[in-house]
Length: 263
Ligand SMILES: Nc1ncnc2c1ncn2[C@@H]1O[C@H](COP(=O)(O)OP(=O)(O)O)[C@@H](O)[C@H]1O
Ligand SMILES: [Mg+2]
Image 1 (cartoon, rainbow, N blue to C red):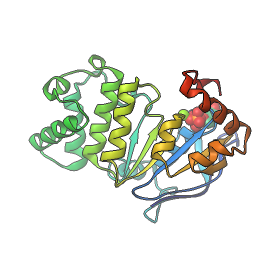
Image 2 (image 1 turned 135 degrees about the vertical axis):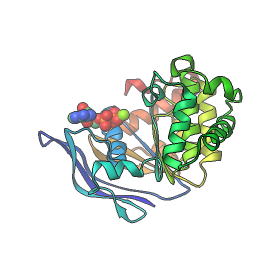
Image 3 (image 1 turned 60 degrees about the horizontal axis):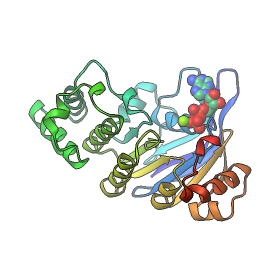
Image 4 (image 1 turned 90 degrees about the horizontal axis):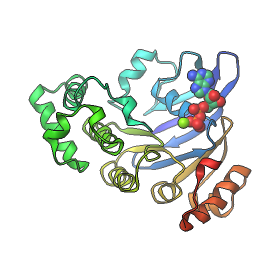
């Protein structure tokens, strides 16, 4: 279980970026996180991953990963857990890769260093996981530079690395926002089928995905949890202005007018 208890995160000036955040992410569950842009969703993921900017810090509360409190770990030991226990799917996969190195080198290095495999085992694992995310032309992918692949393909390579690392918990920051429909559906299917046993914190504005994947959804507003429940309940009886707007817009989605960016 990944458990967050009364977490406060402050910026250097003393401003709260997150205030009194509590949530539970059990293994085998997908927990949704939504809310207005700037409400603190990415800051929460960064706090869990030990990747807060140096101008921000955890001021109070706990982040318990299978009963180990991460909030007091050094940045270094915190980040060592990433990959082993915690995995991350970014919104823009381009930022996760080094543009100067081929995909194959980056996948192999990750598996060799993190999983202590030899080069040939690492290559086999890379190929196996690329096939599992429907990138079947593995030699071409491994030989490509990041700039030679589309955003959707890179997001799938990022998912393949994650599947190879097989962390217990996955934090996904609007992972489908930049994808076309086909890649979006594929990524959601990968999360649903190949990450079944993991605890997933899924940041999204995708109503259908939040409805289909998440048992429970938290809504952030200005650094606080302002609402939570099943997506169906949040949409049918929204309590806050933001959720009322989100719900109203979501009903228009079927007519092709859906624009969450307006929120
Ligand atoms: N490096 C930073 N230093 C100080 N404040 C930041 C930093 N990054 C983000 N913030 C602030 O934290 C708040 C939450 O941002 P963020 O977590 O990115 O929101 P979201 O992901 O929900 O859009 C915003 O007010 C933003 O200006
Ligand atoms: Mg964000």
